[in-house]
Image 1 (cartoon, rainbow, N blue to C red):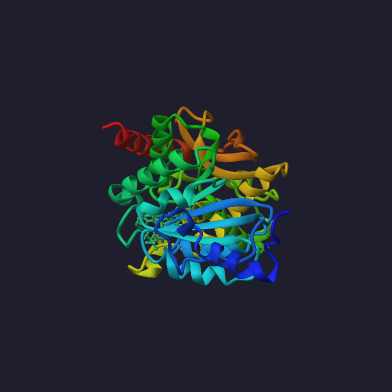
Image 2 (cartoon, protein in one colour):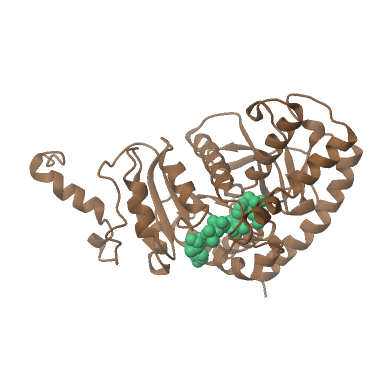
Length: 355
Ligand SMILES: NC(=O)c1ccc[n+]([C@@H]2O[C@H](COP(=O)([O-])OP(=O)(O)OC[C@H]3O[C@@H](n4cnc5c(N)ncnc54)[C@H](O)[C@@H]3O)[C@@H](O)[C@H]2O)c1
Ligand SMILES: O=C(O)C[C@H](O)C(=O)O
């Protein structure tokens, strides 16, 4: 008979093993980067890379609240002991473990079903997202090499900017490793949709939860293309409203960067958006049907190899890339501008991996 782990004589030993799971395997462990005692709940194993950052911390909190998550691994190059100890005291069922520094990346990733990546530098006022390329391209490459080594079947939600280039970089990493499945690599553009829903709802005077605006293209400036002709529930806008809304949605990130005046970019709304998108991926992985979200993925919707549109999520990730649908003249002009800039960003990402 197996010893009963809940028998009083075994309970503290079980807690100790959870508190320091890597120590048992001889790897350096984070003593304070603990987990909670309860294990074995059904659900998915999720890793957040960049978990101690402005997005990473609230995202860790939100994923710890998600009942579909049974194990939550928090990885960063700084501060994970504190973040993990803190989040691990929430009385929700996910077991939380912390991992600090490059030597613990593989342990953080092994066995994961979903990997969410908000690691990397954020913008300061006056910068474009592309100005982050030199720093963030290498970070994304290193982290995705870890994914290819340790959890090649995981679904990856990539947040690090410039998303228009980091997703192509991740694809090249996975191709080189022989693990690439385009369905499992998803650039997170949910914040653009959240902003579009919010700003459109403000104009219409309705609850943003009742509005759905498809946002296609990519995730920077003119590549963010809201399809205001396809808003649900159906509605119409004046030309002036269309110009105002398009401009505000395309520059929503810059609005936050300027308001934060040097202390970073969107973190709380981004964590909310990433948690929403991560939850959609997990529900689809569980087998829920009919889950459709916008995401920047490998695509044949245009002549470009990557493009954001609505995608139908399933057990294997982005299982169906949905078409653009009918565009009006204003959107067709916007699409051409988006494609021009996107093409350069995609080539830059691919070029980084092939130089
Ligand atoms: N896709 C989107 O819609 C969207 C929205 C907002 C922000 N972003 C991007 O997300 C990224 C993070 O933003 P933030 O505000 O959280 O920044 P932040 O600086 O607050 O946090 C980034 C975290 O990444 C960590 N990090 C750096 N190098 C790492 C590595 N090699 N491995 C693991 N972790 C590493 C840092 O230690 C830090 O904790 C930025 O690139 C930002 O532009 C994207
Ligand atoms: O604007 C930024 O730099 C961060 C992010 O891409 C956003 O849209 O908020």
